[in-house]
Every structure is written in C-alpha cells, then in structure tokens.
Image (tube, rainbow, N blue to C red; front, side):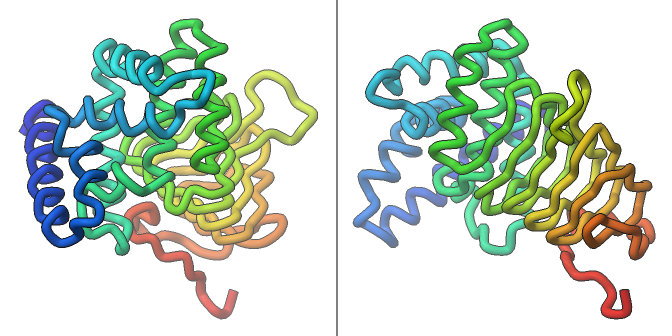
Length: 265
C-alpha cells in the first residue's frame, strides 16, 4: 500500500467510526459532522481542525486554513508525517481506541501537525507567521516547539503538557515523548546548541536533555532525569545528573513504552 492509499484507507476508517460515534453519542453529532463528516478528505479535516484551534480574534481561522492547505499541497512530507504520527498514537497509546481520537482530541498529536506547518513556513522564510503558529500552539496545546526544530515521522507526544523542543533540536523517526520533556540549551551557547534524539528513543515524563548532546538510537531516558552528556545507543539512563543504569538489549523503547527501571538500580 503506497502513501496515498494509506491516507485514503485511514480516512475511510475515520469516517466510518465517526458515523458510529454519532449514533452512540448524539450530543456530539454536530461536532462530529463539522470536524469529520462534512469534509471530503483527511487533509481538509486536518486543516480545519488546526485552523479552528489556533485562530484568534485578530487572525481568523479561515486565513490559517488557507495557509495550512498551502503547506500540505506544497509538501508531501507533511501529510506523510501526519499519517505516521496518527498511526503511532493509535498503536502506542493504550487509551486511544479510535483513529479519530488523536485528530480530534489529542493535543500532543495536534501540536506536532501545527509544528509541521510552522516548519514549512520557516523553511520558506515566513518566520513571523511560523512564530505565530509556535506561539498559538504553546497557548492552546501547551507544547512549545521552535519552527526550526527538525522532527521526523511516527512521533508520539503523549499528554503534551509542558513539552519544550528548542530551535536546533533534531528528533528522528519513531520517538516517544511524554509530558514535561525539555530538549533545551544550556543557556550560554549559541548556534547548534540543542539535543539530537535518534530513532527509537523513549523520553519519559519530565525528563530534561540540555545542550548539543546525542541521545543514541533506542535509548531510554527515565522519568525526571537530567541528561547533560551523550547517551550511548541502546542504553537506559536515570537520575540527576543522568547515569547509565541498563541496556535495552535490542528492544525499541519508543515502541515498548516501559518507563520502569530495575529495582536494584
């Protein structure tokens, strides 16, 4: 199945499950119709949802909707990333029972999609509008991602509240990020000063990674840890400052979502 077929089949599933939910919860019938059922494509529904969330009294949703559609139409990477993020949320989050739920309700997912548009704006030298998307995303969803930060696909931001990702951060494909995570600078450096997070990494709740350090592929950062140095591939670190406490032994922490570490550590 190619990307276009995946998007179309996923959109069909979302529409079908939404029709069932209208019958199950008639109080939300109008909401389901305006957000999902009245749209003829996944991209149209996405643009409408994000625009309505991020619009304000001075910047109308209609104007933002046009910008988001332009971004999606200009870059196939945006919709591809969105679809992989959606499937990651469905597969990894045990509370997610429907494919429509991240699209409608999960602020971590929606903040990622707003960032994808902001990133496109930044790359096209529309820095002021990109900052508007960043600012409104922080206000509405509680997630602050600089438009220049480079994010991969299949990323899950669970809960979202308090996540901060700095300007020169890199987050590769298939990374799971929980509430309160900070990918920040040390406060004194300029230029390339933020973390590089490789594929398969799990960043547990309230973990902090500071400076231009590398979190190796399939590493796990325990909840509440403060990472100031590079983390080797496949290792688990914990503590303040974080120290190596275990190995992932070939597993992918971003998929397993196991926040626990051994009791003897």
